Image (cartoon, rainbow, N blue to C red):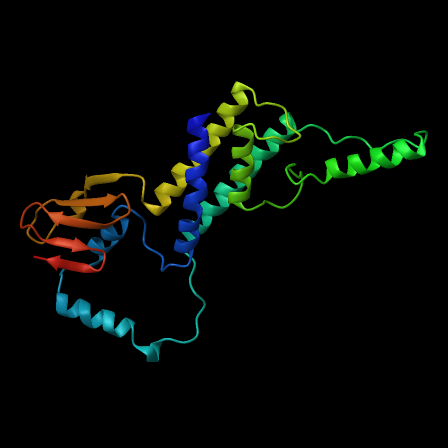
Length: 234
């Protein structure tokens, strides 16, 4: 239970990072995927030519009023996480949410009927209840609702069974893993590019990335270094 609660809290605190990255200029993949494309497209690394191209890209004469581009990889991740969490909450609520107190019948005494009606309506309107059949709610709301169930917070709910806790935990871990993979904050990694991405000297190229760091590459032969913006040392 503790691990699932921690996972949900981490997902909740990570969500603003996804929002912040959503409007960023799209990066061609995490963990050096942009470097792969860069190295595949450019055969001769000329810093002077690269600087001229970047200056030309920023020429105001070429820019009109354009909408801020969305990072589609992050957008897809956010929508997928929201859908997965919402489905998990729907399944969980169907199993553990206690039905509202029914409204009184016409045969109830007037005084009792008024009191029962007020109690029933308050129970139906309880904001802690999961509302079925609505549009997909924000991910942080759903994660908080699931966290409350994991922590057995008060409300119109039965205690989760062990399989139900495990189910929520699995969905939460999958959602967080997807968020971290998209943001490239999961861990530090290194890999070697294939023979189609050799340095000019013929040397093997290694790429480092992950952990939120900007990906970089190094030639094991001549020692040249690259980032996604170009050569930084040769």
